[in-house]
Length: 379
Image: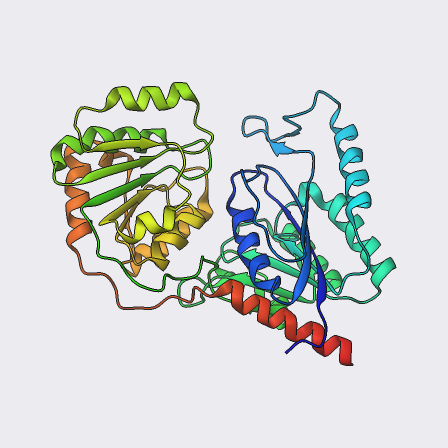
């Protein structure tokens, strides 16, 4: 299919959580079948990055958003933020290995406006060094709605810089225009590739009486884990596997363990085989984060989701999927043991929907990029 091995530059910055990096790595895994990929990433890091042929990665000095002040700060540095930006720029310059056949930027220009100077600087260098190579955007299907003038700026940036906007989503579930009013202005560059999830298992094991309760990669959701532990004595026939965030402190884990009143609860701080655990679970209970939902749907596991109030994007996705019967929504009042017990029993016993959701986004996007690069090279 490919005349020669390609080289792709990938830029992904997470300002909260791990979802963006996880999705990007699934795409990189597919790209690595025909391209060497250089990834520039920042924010929260994974404990272990994948080993793939021709894969290099640079983790930039971390810059995060302070949820209290909404200001950017560098958690690992006492230097002024300007120094950290300069350090990042120098690290990028040392890392880049020209030339590239394509560039992929995750989320920008639909988000990451705080990183605009760094990203546009990178685009300018790419144009200087590699002329008209395509720059692709990789974005989730639901955005945090923005004012019209902000959307107009995003459209302008797409038209100036982006060859194709790859949307990780299925229009049968959510349309991009539901949270981006000016979608029609970029419809000629927009392609839905399907949700990005890990590859499906070769065989489907038998489900056990096990409930996986997970917090995701962030720092919220302890109340959900507490409620599940307190509900466990009412459901003695089920094993509760309670998975905290890998960022949970020893104090938080000790506090959860102190709540255990029944022998059917196990608390762990990280699961390397989360998808395998879901495959054999009767139910998933989670905050309904992006990656957790993908794992839940891809493994066709019945699910309860407790949407995090601070994230309208997750709330809308959960609402859409619950409307199709894939998950049931939990509210704050459902977190008492008696009500949560009822919700659990109902969710486990209701039939699973027949509808199939497009989940092959990583493969689809990788294939489309290969075709575009081949076409541009032969023109």
